[in-house]
Length: 480
Image (cartoon, rainbow, N blue to C red; front, top):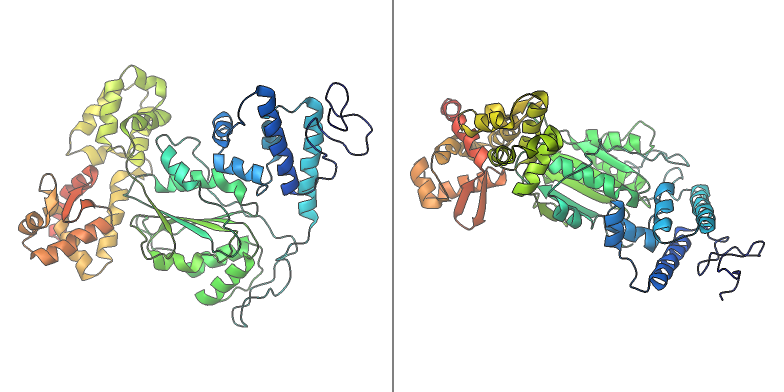
């Protein structure tokens, strides 16, 4: 029988060091590492009691809905679980009622000890900046920003992407921050996935989450300059003004404030790598998640994740989230037709679902029939402030902003869309009347803004809704 336990295997009362059966002692626990030792002991004990292998992080994730990487951080002592999660976790690991109370007290003691320690970056005039770029003073207990927009609870069909985003977390000391860049065509759900991942993985970053919409692909809006974002972030991190005027000095102050902090930065709708670079921290404890239409290939050290449309079954599930899953059951074929006409893009599916929700007496087949007409499909995919055409138009504006070569590509877009099936360079040259060398530059520009995809060198094809956008804009483009 383990020392410190009674005949029933429970902790003995009044002993000098409180201990749970096969776990403990707990009375001296005041760090996340020490608390993690107790969690690992509970996990091993549960395996011995059940006569099997230890429960895996993925099994715990399936039971709780938490990211399995976050659970791993709990057991490694990298992250202190919130009170409700800690209670759930130790119950799943078989803790008794008395053990629950002892462990909860230990968890609260860890949090209190962490709060009472002086902030390592809480001094005035921190090192690491020159005179011109010295950062504003930081309060002794800096604020914890929680800037992420509201989460969408469910993202069907994105399980693989969420598993890949599970790499987000503080890097080992001596390495820079991890940067993950999401890209994909308009309406593919980049922003929703980034915000969802930020919420699920946010507990790995106890010093907060920063968020900025850089408006690089927003309709009728100019991209937000880096200095504007830096001033917002400095304020959120507790720096007092006045803030440095130059981008370089503001970026230096920002990086200094993040030293020894564990913060997740979500940069949404980036235009290009140049807009993002000043907003990257240097601290190993931070991570950055960036979304953009095109691939930010010039962003040094970034891990790239390319988003594609959803699988058909997941598309119907997303449609049901907005229209009501029960409503689609009786008209499954019509729901599948809507998903197909939406090109399995989350934004288009959300619009279609919202339209059905706004017309509760419509049969689902009515909207499916409306979307079946290519001439009116994009017009039908508009509701309130959601507009599929506007999402595609952002790529067109980006082309025009690229100078002469981008303008030539914009002019060629409707001509290329008139061709059916996959395009080769010679076929595209015949459609546009340009030389093959010029045509290849045009095609690559259209790939960069996600109007075309290229699955092999010299071969290109349109995303279906993008083709309709290009054909609908034919008359307008001839007048450009």
